[in-house]
Image (tube, rainbow, N blue to C red; front, side):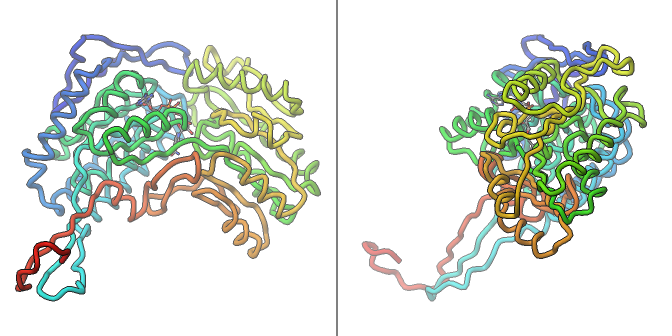
Length: 492
Ligand code: NAD
């Protein structure tokens, strides 16, 4: 078994308790690595190291230009090692090598983009209305940032936070998911080679309730950048509020993929399949509700079933595989439970509906890609996030009805609209309550474009130029250049 230690102050170290936990390979359904189980003591060591690096270490004296160069060098090293890092991610989360290699190969762009941005973070000179004063603003890093990530895309989602945090001049402690910690620990080995001083980035692995909450509660942490479920996000937000920490939250979704009768049906079928069965449905933006115009319901469903039922399952390392296993045993059980919930609610099972018992799936945690027809949007299967390969099809009459159904959700992360009518595309983009709307495409992301949710799907935005502000605070500086001494008892 491979062994992974914590990374604190530039050193790989054991947890102080000496405890370990196993990380499973979802394709084999058994452990492949041992990870150090960090506790509150280790969290404190990591946060103290990050705090020293922020206040006294060489990082605090590194110019923004030099920070940017370090980020770019890190990007180059990730590009060099993309295959190795992607293989570790596949081992841990069971997602397709093709998907993870694509993701890891794209990650350097975030380090180049935010590396370039580092020395363009500027304050303003304020054209003050009061003579005799010079007033300017400084944009300062918030301090130590806690980055907490989920199991589905560990390095990509850590990068979305790490690159802007480092560009801003913050230091960081990362707590990856206890189910997929290995790739983050492989990745931090590149920091020293890139030239980052010790303590700037630290990693403490362990369970959410113990390690994660110790990080959220630590008094020297000033900002929490979290991706995960809305249930955990709520707890993190409430606890962070006790010490007035900055918080950004990327949470779950129940995203509608809306197909109108005028859409190119072949393209839309591809987009619907990509939205729910890519990554075995384990993406926050999974298009888990297909809203289908009733005039094309039958022919579209026929085409959809033909494509979805041809999906090849099996070893995620095999480039021919299209649907891999579910990442954790608990999640595998949860997906199967939701399938039973949908059946009990009266949804019509059109495809799948249980564990995959194909020989190519071996002893892995595989669920058959599942499609339910005639779903009522009020049912649990249409309102709760499954986070697996389960699609619910809901009929709509017209545009008005589609908007009402799309917005009848506590979530608001992504939405797809398939139509040939440009006016309708714009109307839908305006009326749908979600942070991302894709028209005639689905599940596209870029370092340049803001990503985040409305309603219970989160707070704040990642990616794009403004996301660096999540790691900055503004100071207003007043300099008296000759204003006469005023009456001390009234506001100047
Ligand atoms: P999760 O909420 O169970 O765990 C996320 C992280 O929080 C893990 O590292 C976990 O250890 C930690 N954690 C758990 N309890 C904690 C606590 N009390 N204090 C601090 N940290 C704690 O989520 P998951 O099951 O790992 O991931 C799946 C969820 O993530 C889904 O809901 C999915 O939609 C969401 N997600 C969102 C996005 C997005 O960008 N919006 C992207 C990917 C995944």
